[in-house]
Image 1: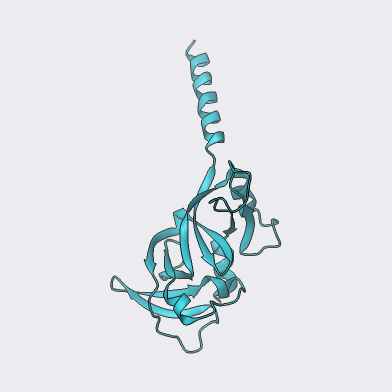
Image 2 (image 1 turned 180 degrees about the vertical axis):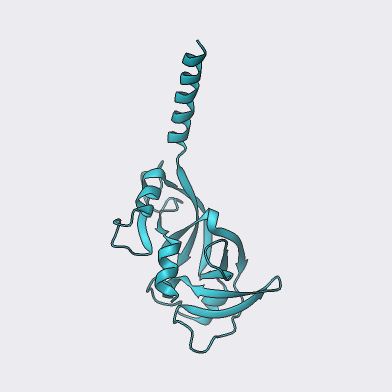
Length: 173
């Protein structure tokens, strides 16, 4: 009888996990595109601030900022993905910094145009993002449409999942 009860509880737990599977992402905008950074990799989000340029740095590196007594490198997400930069300095100044956790030995932040919110990528999309054969080993690895809605532009946060290790390998030597 205990074995049957344990098996029933295990099945119930498996169903709950499968219906709630997925990974939360911080959705941000770079130009007209929306990208999702895994929420587990986000330490904090801050308003953009001026960076100190680094002579001879890789093109995607905007520069350095001081945050809470630490020097943090600021990587332009748009440039790291090969997208065009914001049209003006006013747009860049109105953006956000996404400070990352646990992805580099040195503290690192992503500069984005704006942060839009948090959305969950389906378990299938998250699994495809982890698949190195997904869309050609690119940092923008998979499209994550949000379920529960029929018409585009109705407040959904459809986005492209960013694979941070791939992005950082491509953008930083």
